[in-house]
Length: 260
Image (cartoon, rainbow, N blue to C red):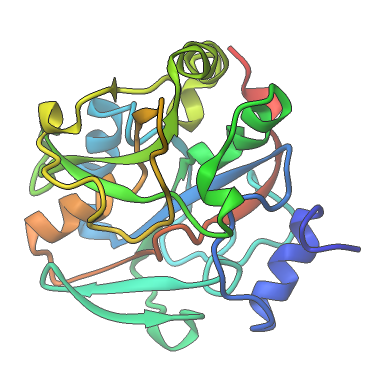
């Protein structure tokens, strides 16, 4: 089976270290999720942070303390190995990039799975809309906006947003399609002038991605599941783990099940 189409095969490839790239364009029709892995002492505040900021943090599943399985998301999922690449934070700073978490796992860790906008991109393509970063073979660029998150405990910071360029007609269609899927970020939070949300340079995202805004197009921004990592950096908590930007956990959940 092809890892581009079957979630379990994709996860097995990631687990074996055979694939460590971005997940945009993979396993169309299945939900991809962002991960945030935190010590249990921060779990209640973070779960409340998700509830207060649902556009950026649509919470789909929470693990038991110390458990690396998430059975509600798919068969035989191991959050320590089944993401192509992870980012480790210490005291709010980037510490290292990892292809697995075997040596970093602790018995006090709790995993949060948040819906990701990669989940609906095949629907955009199906309706004839371009998805530029897939066209270019990469991931969506992500920017840190000037929009404040609602704070919970140590977690606050600014809203992170992913960007996809469209023309006017395409933007209207993209809003119609994505607004039906709030559990994977839903409709855009902004389109047009990026300066309005504090983005000074559209060519310099805080989290690298591939894009090109062409003649007749303008940037369209969705709330992004990297928002928790921005919050973790702002909180400067001692230890946390997230997926690397653009490198998601692909679940067995069909996107059609999330249609609202």
